[in-house]
Image: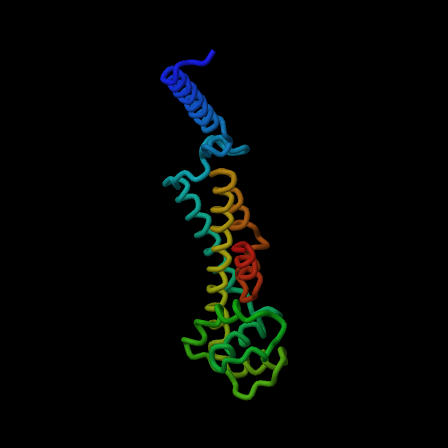
Length: 219
């Protein structure tokens, strides 16, 4: 038996309203139970620590780690004589600034070398003219002969530049660990780098290792 058109319209409207309410309730339930609806429900998150603001104690711990890293590294940098690799890495960086040359040593990319050589380029370190291409030991010998008076000082300046890169790696590891797993894992990741003897040893030298690590972490 067919209903009156007005009654049929009323029933249809009531049914549509009921369906709409059910859909709305289902959507609200989904939002409350969805694992992506709030950071606290992400598996492995330590109770909302991810993405939280950095507190004063955490800032202090990180700052102390950086100061410790820079202080120990500087003490090593000022006492150590130039090592085997530094012997040509640094003058190759100076050649980038002074002559725009990248061929005096083709073993490593020039970016970290150029960064470490900034104090030398600005401070007036001597670089012989007419350097042969790809002669690392000859490059190191001629740089030593031209800068005997300030030789150790130039290497200390370059090592300080590299220490800045090494400390930056610790900061990146802390921040990444913090964003991924929380405050504790972030401090652990950064602290392990900043206090690791091997990382300190490489950070206190004018070599590409710390810079390469920093660039790799930013990929």
